[in-house]
Amino acid sequence: MNGRLVVFCCERSGIPAWRQAEAGGGLPEAMQVVSVPCAGRIGVVNLLKAFEEGAAGVMVFACMQDSCQSLRGNVHAEKRTESARQVLAAVGMAPERLECHTISPPMAQEFRERVWAMMGKVGVEESKG
Amino acid sequence: MIVGKAKPVEEVVDMVQGYQRILVVGCNSCVAVCMAGGEKEVQVLASALRLAFRAKGREVQVEEAMTERQCEVEFVDTVRDKVEKAEVVVSMACGVGPQTMARRFPDKAIYPGINTSFMGQPEELGVWSEQCGGCGDCVLDQTGAVCPIARCSKRMLNGPCGGAQNGKCEVGNDTDCGWQLIYDRLKAIGQLYRLEENIPARDWRTDRDGGTRRIVREDVRA
Image 1 (cartoon, one colour):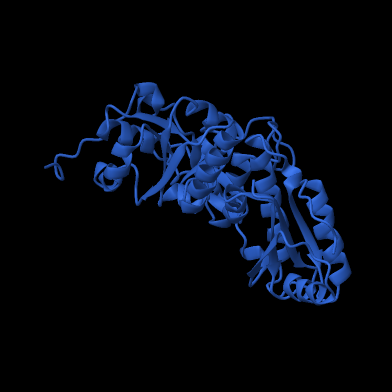
Image 2: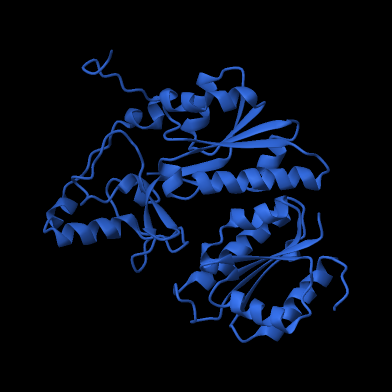
């Protein structure tokens, strides 16, 4: 485990929320953002690969209900996150290390809070700037 | 198509417990279409195995490979190099795949990564149902193209039985009564008279009762 948080963000919701949060400051340094055209594009294998490559925790930020430009990308994202959680449990890893949330572009504060909450949950120590 | 379902990861982990070099091989035919043993599923199982052994404090080598059709030796030969480097192969093809691999690589341990379920069709995205029993003596001409062997829970040739209610079978699970479906179809094509024709007791040796089946065709044989 390299103590990193990998955060997959839909470019229509998670990415603008992240940019705003970043502009406001106070995001952890041990965080890697992966931009995707739609959270529904993230496969189970992408989530597992992040853990294989040493992530301490993995998060997915998808569009809010009924706001997905691809119609059901957020639904697919939640289902695939759940499938990946089941795999984690089956291989002896804590499924809580993987989370999926919906978010909209102006929700920078919620983005910040969820990321820090996950940092605490997976035990990555870093002081809030 | 042949429909299957991935085995629980824990079961596969147990199978390959003592090995250091593992190869997971998928099949691009039926099991890829039913999302049980295609490329994505191979990647997921391989990743799960690596994570499982890492969680146990062991680093194992897990490789991935795909065959176009794992039921034919010519296609299995395309992954020979990877098979030879591995100690064990987990096949994610239907049950024919591991047996073809075992025939081609007689000194290699080959394990199944999926449970082969039935010959069926997709009803909707994520839902598959059994359609053909592979009994070796098709009667679809007499039953409105609804298979009584696969779709009647009792495999009745002259149904329905008394267990159906509101078009559903007494076995539950929201299973349609096969003979209700046969009635509906015969009615739709104006062949209800077929229900008055008795289908005689049949010779089940063409099914599994006759032992392992084999077809020999001299006209196409080498």
